[in-house]
Amino acid sequence: MPVFGALALVCGLSAFFTWRSIHEPDFSFEAATAPQNASTGLIGGRPAPPLQGPLKNRKVWRLVAAIGLLCVPQFAVLSFATVFLHDHGHLGLAAITAVMVALQAGAMVMRIWSGRHTDRHANRPAYLRGSALVALASFVLLGCIAWLDAPGWLLMAVVVAAGIAIPHLLAASSWPVVWWLAGLVALATRPLFPKA
Image 1 (cartoon, rainbow, N blue to C red):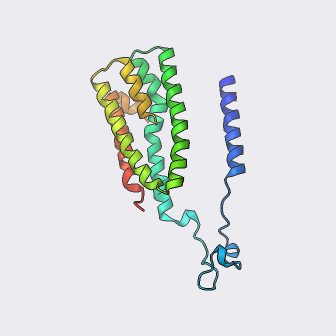
Image 2: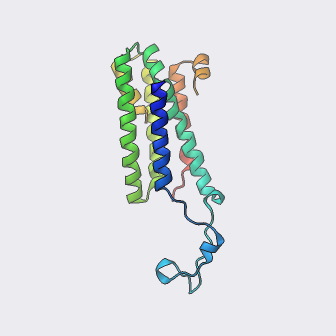
Image 3: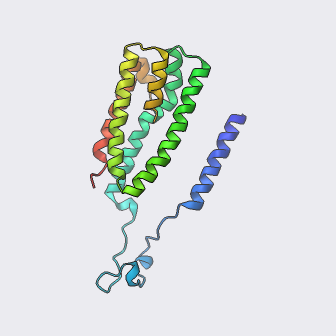
């Protein structure tokens, strides 16, 4: 019970900070047609045309679909890495815990770094296309290592590197197939990210 209470508290804090810091622009017709000065975007002496809401933008929907698909391999790792390392790698609780802590800490650092990096360079779609290829390579490598029945320390390293719905697939096939298919899902997201 204390574990779920702590998780709920952290989720609540995250929701609070998100609510306090993220503000949606005003897409109303009144805001778009209000008089503007030169520093805010007059177009030929007239106000800028009304902004299109993000939900009517196909590019936004493509990005959402791609990012949603990229969550599949991430959730595969988060949901099943511990089972994989225990059952296939024969690792104990301490080793599995170390892998999951390293994975989560690395993911937190990379999300913050990548967000700042892509904000500065205005290259988020290109960065995400590259990330899809890195995810593909990571999961193909993980599948190959599982197929070769590699030692536990190598499995630990690759799971952390790959971490950025599986039980039925695992029951019908094997761990290598699970990881290879997670990589293919990551690859399928690549064309959804716009090139410009």
